Structures are given as C-alpha cells and as structure tokens.
Amino acid sequence: MSGLGASAAAGAVGGAAAGAAAGLGVDMDVSPAPATVADIRDGFRRQRRRTDTDEDRQEQFALEQETEWRRTLQRELQLSSLEGGVLESRTVIEGWVSRVRATAEEARVAHEQAVAEAAALQAAREQFRQETEQQQQQQQQQQQQQQQQQQQQTQQQPQQQPQQQSQQPFGATADRDRAAV
Image 1 (spheres, rainbow, N blue to C red):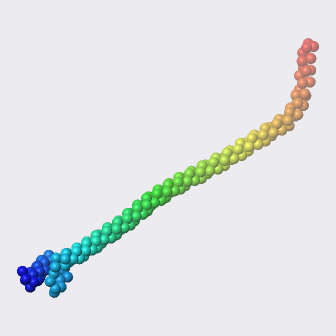
Image 2 (image 1 turned 45 degrees about the vertical axis):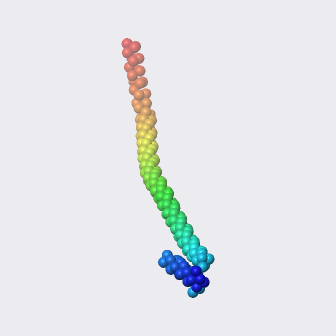
Image 3 (image 1 turned 60 degrees about the vertical axis):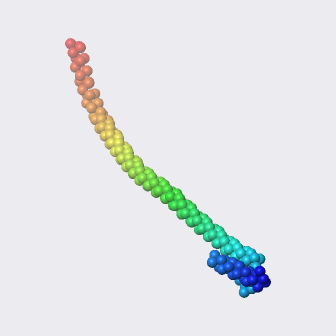
C-alpha cells in the first residue's frame, strides 16, 4: 500500500474505532488527525479512568449514604433508648408514687386508729374517774351514815344506862327480898 492508502486505512481504522467507541458510549477525544493504535489505547485509558472515577464517586456516595444511614439509625436507637429510659424511669417513678401513696394511706389509717384509741382511752379514763368519784362519794356517805349512827348510838346509850341502873336496884332488891323469903 502506498502512503496515501495507508493513511486512509489508518484514518478508516481510527474513524471506525472512534465510531465503535462512540457507539459503546465511550467518550473519546478524536482529533481530525488520523488515530493510531496508541491514540485508541489512550482514549480507552482515559475513559477507564473516568469510569473508575465515576465508580469511585458512586462508591463514595454509597459509603456516605451508608454512614448517614448508620448515624440516623444510631440516633434512632439512642432516642429509643432514651424513650425506653424515660419509660423505665416513669415506671420507677410511678412505682415510687404508688408506694408513697400506699404508705400515706397506711399512715392515715394508723393515725385514725390512734385517734380512735386515744378517744376510747380518754373515755375509759373519764368513766374510771366518774366511777371512782361515785365510789368515794358512796364511801363518804356510808362513813357519814356510820358516824351518824354511832353518834345516835352514843347519844342513846347514856340515856339507856341510867334507866337500866335505876331498874337494877329495884330488880336486885326484889331478888334479895325473894332470897330472904
């Protein structure tokens, strides 16, 4: 082949390669000069680098998305843990409140019982005091009655003794008179 034929053949090969590359979606930098095999290789290498760069970018984007997803998941887990902690704390607090209420109710009932027992004790003391006063009054009345009876008896005895003494001489004389007979 002559030089012109070789150039045309090389141009055709370069054009065909460029067309094939364009048909494959490969962006080749095709100059109007005839393409050589080295030019075609360089074009493929550049395209590979761009493709690799795009793949790297996509991979980087996927990694960033995964990282963001993990962060979001971690935040959600923390929030749910906090919510769980809040719920657990609320449950604990409600338990404390119910225990405090139960203790307060027990204390109220115990106080009411203590007040009732104190009132009953006071009533028993008052009743005992009244009974004691009544007994003391009865004893005083009995003592007064006994004293009055003793006074009456002592007043009556001196009056009875002279009568008995006055009767004895007469009775004694009658006995003497009888004995004499």
